[in-house]
Image (cartoon, rainbow, N blue to C red):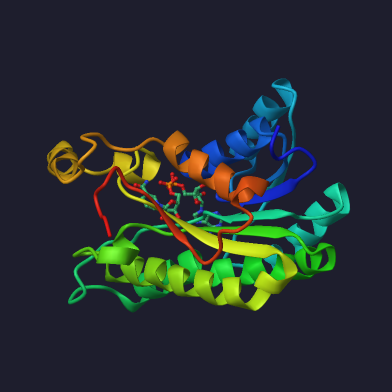
Length: 247
Ligand code: NAI
């Protein structure tokens, strides 16, 4: 198993893409620290991983709370000895046309999607620097690359994550720590379940592969970037969008 001996911290692991990433990393041999706010859902995930012969633990975490980020990373390192892989996946939307967007909705999205990634990276960094090995994977979005009407806050946060990814890749590359982003297109998860069927059908028309993506499609990209196979890839944005955006 390609990730055997590695420890991965996944934020927003209670559902959707984060949960599937946690399952995939565990299947590939990593010990998983699954973090999100919903302890009950996390416990169910940990039970599933453990039942399949994997190793995992749940950590209740609101990524907007700096103290909780620090204490979660500390607790995970106390339990598992280190963190090798960080998947910054937690994210929200608060969609509205910019004319009507409330400042609170701008702040909440920037805080949860972008600032939290900075906080998590900062918290795990000394563990990665010490061992001179690390994988940081930020889940951005195709809308951070091309923009989306009604999502000024979300698009800005996801574009910001790409800038953060490249800056961190440059800062820590000399210590064999890579930092990459995965940019999903339209993925079937609770986040997109709320969209109307009309919107979904119109979206699929823009996707050359002719289907929406699955959380597994994203998890495969994350598992690859976390592995030794990807050791010469850093500062990269890996599109998982069915061809929705190319070039
Ligand atoms: P989701 O809504 O199903 O899951 C989001 C996860 O983030 C949940 O586990 C939630 O509890 C967690 N989360 C939100 N706020 C949090 C907080 N303050 N503290 C801790 N955890 C928090 O969404 P989905 O679709 O699984 O999204 C995962 C990531 O993928 C997000 O960053 C999203 O922006 C990104 N993405 C999703 C796409 C899609 O089509 N579903 C497309 C492109 C990117």
